[in-house]
Amino acid sequence: MRYFLCLVLLILFTPAGSQAADAPGAAVFVRLTGNADDARSEVYEQRLSGGKAKVLVAHTALPKAFRGRIERALPAADGAFLLLEESRGFVIRNKKTGATRLVLGNGYSMDGANEVLAERFTGGYWLWKRGAGTLKKIPLLAKNEVMIGLQWSPRERLLLAHVSQSRPSHDIIRLYDPATGKIRNLRAGPESSFVSWSPNADAVLIGEQPNEKTTRLVLAPLNGKAQLLFTRTGRVFTGALSPDGRQVAIGDLDGFFLFSRDGRTKRTLAVPKARGIPAGNMVFSPDGKTLAIFSSSATGEPYVNIHEELWTVQTQTAAAQCVAQWDVTLGNAPGEDTTHVLLGWVPGQPALLVMGRSSTTAGPETEWQKLWLQPVDPARPATLFVDSGPCGIDMACWQGNP
Image (cartoon, rainbow, N blue to C red):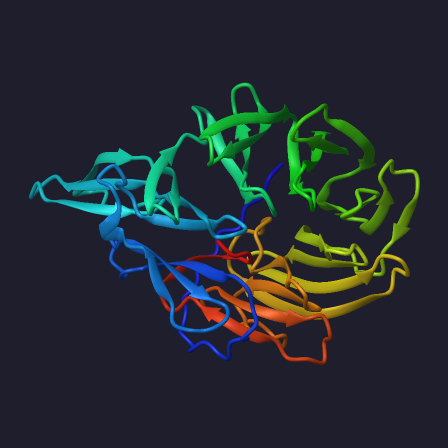
């Protein structure tokens, strides 16, 4: 069973703070051109080393076939490619006057007495190439399929799509290679509670659920036969493979654990277990000595109380410390989405990249997404990189050099 959280927030703009001169990569964010139903959007890029944000993809440069608006921009690890998600669109006609209006996005509303839906069109996924500046549509979804998640590989330029198919009912792990344009299914099976790349990008770790009581930890190499590592009772909502491939970290309702690859040995990590409806992710440091864990718990009705924590754990000693925490109350249905996201480790620094609604460790602010550098030392303040502004609707980050 999947849960979704719709975050509809009134936001205020706060100017961005200081920049880190030696920070690699850039943040990419999508900003609306206005508040009207037919407002378009553009993709901006802000280098983490400083400077002003610049328009990366303008709505005026989109081809005529791009009828919706840009809802999401997901850059490859080195920024060389950008995956754009196109929204749906709806043409509403007034029955009395015959006038029409356009609603862009993934939903619409209308006056039932005077208006009818005259046309609807679906969006899709497009690939933008930095060197050429070209944009082309790619067929990531087929009929009766829904996109669950998208991830670029941490090293090679491969896009992973986690897809759910309704008829027949199963999940598909699909790969797209922008260099060749080829799409292939890596694995098809039961519902997957999580999917994560291996650190060296040669395999994908999958939490498969043949039923609601069991999770199978499966390692699917890009070339070769998938391997069942071990089986865990209950629903595992997050997992990660260590850089040397010898350990598997998981999170479930019983807590957070570090297993040997075959599941025969288990170490309980001193991180509080998630309650209610859990979510989060975890990332090993490049040397494998430290595991960063982001945990989110959603509880309460009709208002949703979300408690989030960011921890680091030493993999050799299991010593753990809480780096930051946030509490948010939302008047929406609980789900697997969170208000903050752990993006990963900053190369060469004892720090993490975190994206979310707040640039501080004291608590959240009602603003659009921000990106900041969070030192693993709780005593050191976080550094704000980017604030997407009053009309921001999406943000992502790349850390390499195109």
